[in-house]
Image (tube, rainbow, N blue to C red; front, side, top):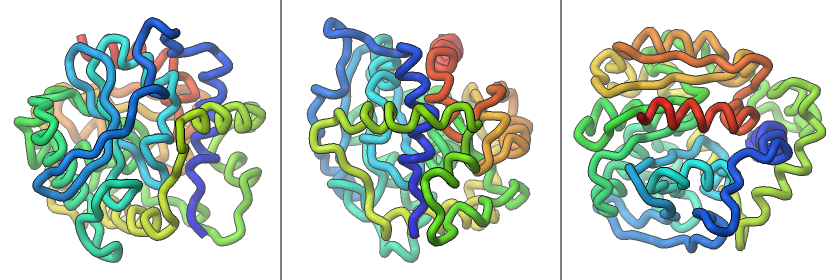
Length: 297
């Protein structure tokens, strides 16, 4: 059974929506009316949305979600000051698979992400990666440093083999949404699940990724954490301003991993959000987007 991140996101994102964070109104950027486009790259086709104006900011999604997993208000808030690009990782939606599912790696997804940056002529964008997306973002900064201006690593971990691995319950067959909520987020936020689901399902033709794609991503993330990707050992070579952020109650990528990652990247700034889980960036979206803006300068 695949790990339903949509439920994990639900608890936190609903709280942000109920708090009124990030809604730009009819006069500002609106991701819900931004069409999905498909661009041909040197690593296959990639589906994406692009909105807003200003310095480019690329958002890299984590496992078990399409680009429709980003809460609209969160994207719109960032797009108020940036040219924001969201996209589907390899094998999700209309984005080409880059390798056979069983051999998918963070490195392979990074190569396709680099090809997207080139195809869209984004130059040297800031990159925000969440969870598995943060692993791709690290690899991108190491392997393609000329394509990254700033790095924002949310709820993710270094790939040296020293990080705390993913918990066994992440893929336990038969686990239900209530159990996942209890494991993933503070219990006092469980009521926000329905509100968040309603929010992301506003996307026209809302879709997720397949169970097979998620399984391949999960294995790729496990291999990164185990130190099996060469770039994972080179966090010390990252030379761009880096913000590492996480939730103190994250049960999937524990807070100790955020601390280890921040200590591994030269000059990295660390932010830990109290009483927050894996999707802290949506749970406390108003604060996090302000932190991102301050970091971006």
